Amino acid sequence: MYRELYFAGPRAEHAPSAERRAILERVAAPPLLDTMLKGITALRASGRVTWGQPVLYTFDVRVQGDRAALHDCQDARKAGQADDRTGKRLTHGMPATHMVAALIKGMDGAWRVAKVEQLEEPCSPAA
Image (tube, rainbow, N blue to C red; front, side, top):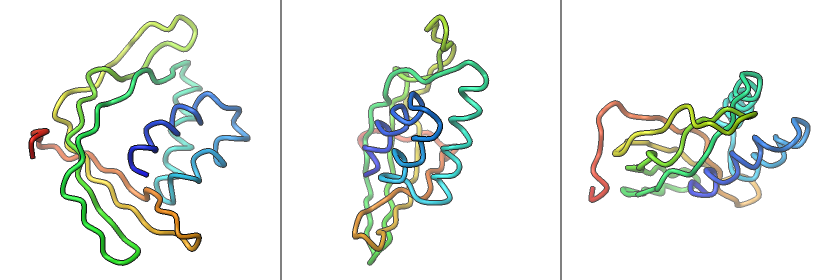
């Protein structure tokens, strides 16, 4: 589900605002769900969209009952923000970006990402 989050986000971003929650609810749970919806609204209001996809290197996956956590040492150099009108790339991510995600298992039995946090320290994909 963590990997799917990175595909659902851009789908929601390009969908009409009334459809965004339904797209994201399949992969995200509060508080991340609400954070993503607000972020997409702000991004679109500024005339920006995202481009590309980070390369994910997940590691240290731990599951305890209906909770899980994982680390990701993503390479986001081929992803960022672009001008919605011109398509000009305005930003790009960095390599060795250390992310930590918390997932919860819903009443429907599906896992969803509830929180994603970037750590300050870079990581190594071989970690």
